Image 1 (cartoon, rainbow over the protein chains, first blue to last red):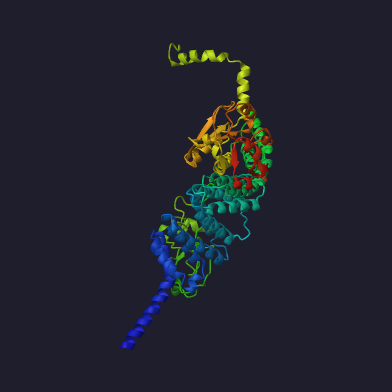
Image 2 (cartoon, one colour; image 1 turned 120 degrees about the vertical axis):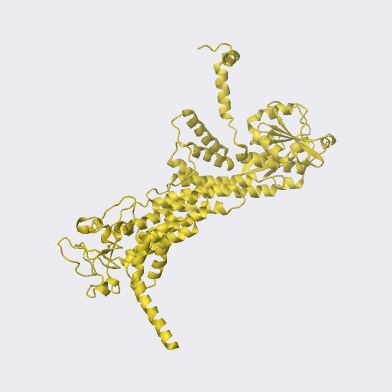
Length: 411
Length: 194
């Protein structure tokens, strides 16, 4: 008796497995179409553990889109970032598996959209003075982009982002100048910017100002408790900062001699270095510029970066097509179907739930399963000629109003 | 539209006499104002260092005149508004011995007040000679900030040295002002003139 129960259980388990695995994808698609993203996710997470399903692009495409939509629906935060990571990873795998580039038109824009949202998170973090998370988001953004396109260069964006990050780090340093952490970070950031773009005016000017202010801050802290030897020590330390500041301020001035802020900067640095003659020289130049009343250039302000407005999920999708696989129920119905066979010139649509047997334009009958199929395509909702969905006809790509989800659109 | 006897008309009547100020005077004032650019006090590193030196110098010298050991310890500042502000902000609540520090901003004129320390900025160097003519600086430690000031009678003179600010001392000038310069102050000086 016990043996019989055990065998029955085993058989049920095996049957369930055989049944559930191929069905997970179709069911997940149904749930996705129905808006049950969480349900779809559970099924897809299970599906990717199945070696056969995990080896197909379709699974990863759908999983990528489900996670993308989950990310979009979630409140921003750590959990949202995890959803996005999953979406990106799935879409990336889909692109790798999709050797025929069948889904690339859909997955690439989705991947691009998600990577841009990482960049935008970096920008939002900067706006919130969260320098560390901004740096991490930016690193992840680059990593995401480079995963698909390893040769991508970020020189311009690195400079732009670095200047904005430096501005934030300086702001954080100014909150508590006794804590040198943000000072050191800002110096590193500006030096990194200058390593990429030595002629960057903003980085030269801001680094010079940072060094200069650091020297001034040391001196500002002198008070009645300082004796003469300590005054001299402080001066020497500050002198080193002023000396560091000088070449960067000079470089910025050389790049744009008409700017007042570098003249003021050079005047201040030379003054603090006890060089009265040069200090007066730059003061005089500044006064001349001031009296000149030439169209003034705006003093350089804090650097900021803008969010990437291209990060909108409005890309057009090509309809998703799935290939039939061995083990699908359609195969059980039509054993002669080729696994993975595709008939892009036909209008027959098969679903994972079985061949719907749509008549072809030439009036034939459903040849066999293994036909090109849309995720969850159903005859009942077709509106194209001969009942075929417009989306699938001739394999053309279409954009469809507000519903940008390929699988839903196909339904 | 008439302004009548409203506030604008009254303001205009008030301003009219002043419009007769010679243009040359206005120009001169403008030019002078342009040269006397006031640096932000918190960025005036030299003023900050000088103030600290003045306080330390005050602690490291002795006034032999008994009258100078009574009452407040007066530090007079001629010119250099930033130095005056710095002294007020950081040192005015301190004492030298038992004498509370009093910081005074002096007019640009020959000094007629009793001061323990008198600072004269370089723009007012002419005032040093003027002040020396009088008798009020008998026991005053004169501090200056231009080259050659020790030869003009200053006891301590600030000078740049290796891109920092140091000071030089004239012991003979100190002696003539009845001031004893402590050993520490001498040892830490950039230059000591016997």
